[in-house]
Amino acid sequence: MDRSAESGPETIVRLMLRSLGLRWEAQVRIPLVGRVDFVVAKWLIIECDSKAHHSSWDAQREDRRRDRAAAAAGYGTLRLLAEDILYRPDTVQAAIAGLASRHRR
Image (cartoon, rainbow, N blue to C red; front, top):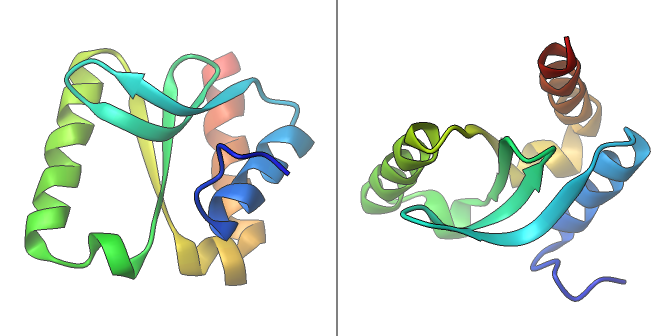
């Protein structure tokens, strides 16, 4: 158990990151971006998005603006859908692993 997890999908992603042997921090505040779910290897932001909090146009617009601010600060962002984390975890883990291995090269 880790109190920094705010949802079941975040817990699953944390386990994926651990199984991939990646270094990560949870619930990180980044200037001009705000708090993000994970920062992996000090360059990749991972956000776990659910329909409940990200389905309105206003929420999606804000997410895109935050992603743009993160890019300006040198971060890449991977937005994962909670339903994919829960029901397609193999594709989610493959995406994380692919980005992590590409960055290591």
